[in-house]
Image 1 (cartoon, helix red, strand yellow):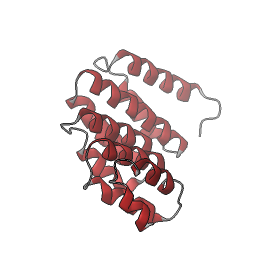
Image 2: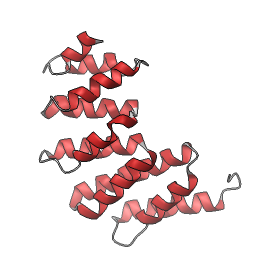
Image 3: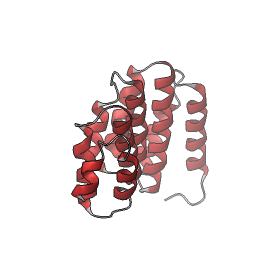
Image 4: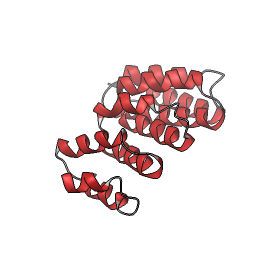
Length: 164
């Protein structure tokens, strides 16, 4: 594990290091990726953020949330998408806060990540939280594609025969 973690900063080998770490079930892989967040920049940082999103490491949520407003727009977008993938109430809260503070394309990315988060909440059995997130996303000031998807989510859940 330490050998792979050391390669995360390597311009040419970081992708291979991440691919090596992503499937490892041991928590030390998450630790290595979280540690790298504070040491990397640019493409290597974005790659690590993406790997964290794939692994759905809830311990990384606060670090990802702090990157939502990063000066590097690509880092911010990666962090937003990873938060959506993590799911959970903490991610939903951070994404809703970001929805109110972002504009343009970044706001659309936040709305999309919020939809992913709502679906994760549903899969995890947090139906009420998912519906609350969908309701927030159905507000008139939310980008139209996300607003329509949120309304569809509400209708699907409210009319589902298999409701819990």
